[in-house]
Every structure is written in structure tokens, then in C-alpha cells.
Image: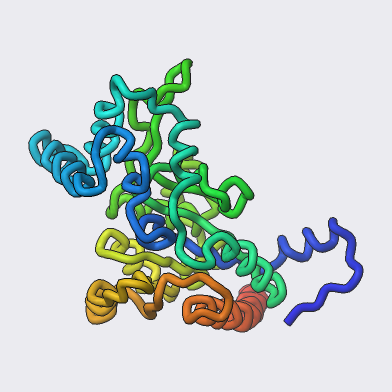
Length: 302
């Protein structure tokens, strides 16, 4: 464990920048929150009551099927259409609803606690959201406002000069989620930067897959989980700690999609908290050895 004495702010930042990076990537709906974010106030505001929420999603999926359309584009279109005559869908409105989203136990303090734990063990923790949910709603959460996330990759709207949502700017589904893992791996975070396709030597990768944790809850996370798992990283399935329905995580475990599973309880000393801290300590030890290997390799090639 690293102990900090009376180093200046600049020296601490320099020390942190020299640490290996561990990227923690999260789905959002039913991973950090018990339900779909849109179903926690927004869908109700466009005329669907609690009993009709399933109807909204059924209609959205039917729209997608009828038009050979991506499901996420369909729900984004339907959100705008259903709001007509009720209110304007603006960034501010979506952020307001995002601020109302219920979060699992411990989520509000999780990101900074884990970041600090990483620093104490010589590992720089970065948190990323990779979600089919709405970016503007995620940006309205308490954690996002405090700067918890290095980057939020999520479905998003384009807004006109009056601030009203008029068109999807980004639609993220279960298959195209994986591109963002490659962006994190190479340190090319801008979604329009084609450099993500460039070859990067393993030793030059900013965050190798072995230094990634992906936390998700369902089939929509499988491509990301499989990619991380197959390349030496750590995929964790979570399930609702109240309902305790483990069917999905059992299935993902049997199919080798995840390495671990735990209740979606992010409080201190929970099973998930303990597991992630063990991975952080493992990362710290492994990267010391990896650094020695790279040094020996370069010296032998000279």
C-alpha cells in the first residue's frame, strides 16, 4: 500500500499519472439502478401510468420491428412523439428526470471510494458508463455532476438552437457497445476519432483489457463481458439484492460470459466492494511484474 506524506498537489498528480490505469466500465439500467431510467418518471410524464410502462416498451419494440429499426432509435423516437403537446424534451428536462433515478445502495459514494482505494494501492481508477440509456439523464445524476465518470457513452439526442431534442445523436445497442472498450484500451475517447482502428502495440495500450472491469446485469452486456473476459479482464454480473433473482447471472456464468457475480450492492464491505478491491490489488501486483517484463524485453532487443 502506498502512503502519502506531505507531497505537493503537483507531485501527487504526477505520481497518479505514472500509475497503471484500471478502467471500470458499467452498464446503467438495472446495474446501477433497479429499473430502466426512462421508467422512473419520464415515461409516466408522457401519459403512461405505472401499469402501462410495459405497454410503452411493447409499442416501442413493435415500432422497431415494423420499420426494421434499431430498438434504441425506436424508443428515442417514441419519447419525442409522446411528449408532443405535453412538454418539450430538452437537455435540462432529461437531466431533471435523471436526478430522480433511484440508485442501488452505495452507488452515490462508490466511485470516489473506489478511486481513493486504487490510489492507495498504486492504481489509477477511471470510471466509464457504456449504456443504451440516455446520456442526458445519466448526466443529471448526482455522481455525474460531481465528475465521477471519465466518459459517458450512452444514447443521446441532438438539440436544436432552442434546446429541444430533434434527432438522435447517438444510439448505443448491445453490439456496438464493444467499440467503446477499444477506445478506452487505446486512449482514443472521442467517438468521432477514427484512430480507434489504428494498430497499437500491446505495451503501448493505455488500458490493456487485463486492466478492465465490466459490470453489467443481462444479455445486452454479453458482447462487452465476453470481450473483456476473453482478453484477461474481469467481467462481473450483478443482480437485484432485493428480488435475488440470479437466473441471468447463473446463465452468464455457465456460458463463460462472466468470471464473478454479486448482488448490486455498492456499499462499503459488500461482496461487490470486496471483489473489486481484490481485483485492484491483483492489478497493482501484476503491473509491477509486467513492467519488469517490458524492461527486460526492451533491454534484450537493444
